[in-house]
Length: 156
Image (cartoon, rainbow, N blue to C red; front, side, top):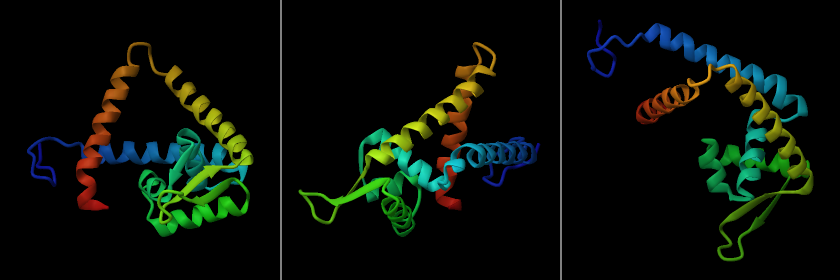
Protein backbone atom coordinates (compact mmCIF):
# COMPACT_ATOMS: atom_id res chain seq x y z
CA UNK A 1 0.00 0.00 0.00
CA UNK A 2 1.20 3.51 -0.78
CA UNK A 3 -0.21 6.98 -0.74
CA UNK A 4 -1.56 8.35 -3.98
CA UNK A 5 -0.34 11.74 -5.13
CA UNK A 6 -3.68 13.10 -3.96
CA UNK A 7 -2.90 11.91 -0.44
CA UNK A 8 -5.54 9.18 -0.26
CA UNK A 9 -4.05 6.12 1.46
CA UNK A 10 -4.83 3.31 -0.96
CA UNK A 11 -3.14 1.03 -3.44
CA UNK A 12 -3.73 3.03 -6.61
CA UNK A 13 -2.10 0.57 -9.03
CA UNK A 14 -0.67 3.62 -10.75
CA UNK A 15 1.51 1.72 -13.23
CA UNK A 16 -1.24 -0.71 -14.20
CA UNK A 17 -3.81 2.09 -14.55
CA UNK A 18 -1.42 4.11 -16.69
CA UNK A 19 -0.61 1.13 -18.90
CA UNK A 20 -4.29 0.27 -19.40
CA UNK A 21 -5.24 3.86 -20.22
CA UNK A 22 -2.36 4.24 -22.67
CA UNK A 23 -3.37 1.00 -24.38
CA UNK A 24 -6.99 2.19 -24.58
CA UNK A 25 -5.93 5.53 -26.06
CA UNK A 26 -3.67 3.83 -28.63
CA UNK A 27 -6.48 1.43 -29.60
CA UNK A 28 -8.91 4.31 -30.11
CA UNK A 29 -6.29 6.23 -32.09
CA UNK A 30 -5.79 3.21 -34.37
CA UNK A 31 -9.56 3.06 -34.91
CA UNK A 32 -9.61 6.74 -35.75
CA UNK A 33 -6.69 6.42 -38.10
CA UNK A 34 -8.10 3.33 -39.83
CA UNK A 35 -11.74 4.36 -39.97
CA UNK A 36 -12.31 8.07 -39.56
CA UNK A 37 -9.32 9.51 -41.34
CA UNK A 38 -9.65 7.29 -44.42
CA UNK A 39 -12.32 9.76 -45.48
CA UNK A 40 -9.65 12.46 -45.51
CA UNK A 41 -10.78 14.11 -42.28
CA UNK A 42 -8.76 14.80 -39.17
CA UNK A 43 -9.98 13.63 -35.77
CA UNK A 44 -11.18 17.15 -34.96
CA UNK A 45 -13.00 17.50 -38.27
CA UNK A 46 -14.76 14.14 -37.83
CA UNK A 47 -15.98 14.85 -34.33
CA UNK A 48 -16.94 18.42 -35.21
CA UNK A 49 -19.21 17.11 -37.95
CA UNK A 50 -20.57 14.35 -35.70
CA UNK A 51 -21.40 16.87 -32.96
CA UNK A 52 -23.24 19.11 -35.41
CA UNK A 53 -24.94 16.08 -36.97
CA UNK A 54 -26.35 15.13 -33.56
CA UNK A 55 -27.37 18.68 -32.62
CA UNK A 56 -28.38 20.01 -36.09
CA UNK A 57 -27.04 23.50 -35.30
CA UNK A 58 -24.39 24.63 -32.83
CA UNK A 59 -22.69 27.86 -31.90
CA UNK A 60 -18.92 28.20 -32.10
CA UNK A 61 -18.82 28.40 -28.30
CA UNK A 62 -20.84 25.18 -27.95
CA UNK A 63 -18.57 23.39 -30.41
CA UNK A 64 -15.45 24.69 -28.71
CA UNK A 65 -16.71 23.52 -25.32
CA UNK A 66 -17.93 20.14 -26.57
CA UNK A 67 -14.69 19.45 -28.43
CA UNK A 68 -12.55 20.80 -25.57
CA UNK A 69 -10.69 23.04 -28.03
CA UNK A 70 -10.00 26.74 -27.69
CA UNK A 71 -12.05 29.00 -29.93
CA UNK A 72 -9.14 29.81 -32.29
CA UNK A 73 -8.46 26.10 -32.93
CA UNK A 74 -12.17 25.43 -33.38
CA UNK A 75 -12.37 28.32 -35.85
CA UNK A 76 -9.57 26.78 -37.96
CA UNK A 77 -11.35 23.40 -38.01
CA UNK A 78 -14.67 25.00 -38.98
CA UNK A 79 -13.00 27.20 -41.63
CA UNK A 80 -11.47 24.15 -43.35
CA UNK A 81 -14.76 22.26 -43.29
CA UNK A 82 -16.58 25.33 -44.64
CA UNK A 83 -13.98 25.75 -47.39
CA UNK A 84 -14.61 22.13 -48.44
CA UNK A 85 -18.39 22.70 -48.39
CA UNK A 86 -19.16 20.44 -45.39
CA UNK A 87 -20.36 23.26 -43.13
CA UNK A 88 -22.33 26.46 -43.40
CA UNK A 89 -21.52 29.31 -41.02
CA UNK A 90 -23.92 32.19 -40.34
CA UNK A 91 -24.59 34.91 -37.79
CA UNK A 92 -27.56 34.49 -35.47
CA UNK A 93 -30.50 36.75 -36.33
CA UNK A 94 -31.13 37.34 -32.60
CA UNK A 95 -27.53 38.11 -31.65
CA UNK A 96 -25.09 39.03 -34.41
CA UNK A 97 -22.14 38.16 -32.15
CA UNK A 98 -23.19 34.49 -32.19
CA UNK A 99 -21.97 32.30 -35.07
CA UNK A 100 -24.20 29.32 -35.93
CA UNK A 101 -22.75 26.25 -37.61
CA UNK A 102 -24.81 23.79 -39.68
CA UNK A 103 -23.92 20.93 -41.99
CA UNK A 104 -24.42 21.35 -45.72
CA UNK A 105 -26.05 18.45 -47.62
CA UNK A 106 -22.52 17.21 -48.42
CA UNK A 107 -21.66 17.47 -44.71
CA UNK A 108 -24.88 15.66 -43.71
CA UNK A 109 -23.99 12.78 -46.01
CA UNK A 110 -20.40 12.55 -44.72
CA UNK A 111 -21.49 12.83 -41.08
CA UNK A 112 -24.18 10.16 -41.54
CA UNK A 113 -21.55 7.77 -42.92
CA UNK A 114 -19.11 8.60 -40.12
CA UNK A 115 -21.86 8.13 -37.54
CA UNK A 116 -22.71 4.68 -38.94
CA UNK A 117 -19.06 3.65 -38.86
CA UNK A 118 -18.59 4.85 -35.28
CA UNK A 119 -21.78 3.04 -34.17
CA UNK A 120 -20.70 -0.14 -35.97
CA UNK A 121 -17.29 0.02 -34.29
CA UNK A 122 -18.74 0.39 -30.78
CA UNK A 123 -21.47 -2.17 -31.49
CA UNK A 124 -18.77 -4.70 -32.38
CA UNK A 125 -16.94 -3.91 -29.16
CA UNK A 126 -20.07 -4.24 -27.02
CA UNK A 127 -20.82 -7.61 -28.65
CA UNK A 128 -17.45 -8.85 -27.36
CA UNK A 129 -18.35 -8.10 -23.74
CA UNK A 130 -20.04 -11.04 -21.96
CA UNK A 131 -23.79 -10.67 -21.55
CA UNK A 132 -24.63 -9.11 -18.21
CA UNK A 133 -21.26 -7.32 -17.97
CA UNK A 134 -22.03 -4.37 -20.26
CA UNK A 135 -23.68 -2.34 -17.49
CA UNK A 136 -20.70 -2.96 -15.19
CA UNK A 137 -18.31 -1.81 -17.90
CA UNK A 138 -20.39 1.34 -18.47
CA UNK A 139 -20.51 2.05 -14.73
CA UNK A 140 -16.74 1.62 -14.48
CA UNK A 141 -16.09 3.93 -17.43
CA UNK A 142 -18.43 6.54 -15.94
CA UNK A 143 -16.57 6.27 -12.64
CA UNK A 144 -13.26 6.72 -14.46
CA UNK A 145 -14.57 9.72 -16.40
CA UNK A 146 -15.79 11.25 -13.14
CA UNK A 147 -12.29 10.86 -11.70
CA UNK A 148 -10.82 12.55 -14.77
CA UNK A 149 -13.28 15.44 -14.40
CA UNK A 150 -12.26 15.92 -10.76
CA UNK A 151 -8.56 15.96 -11.65
CA UNK A 152 -8.80 17.99 -14.87
CA UNK A 153 -8.66 21.43 -13.21
CA UNK A 154 -5.26 20.48 -11.79
CA UNK A 155 -3.71 19.02 -14.91
CA UNK A 156 -5.15 20.57 -18.05
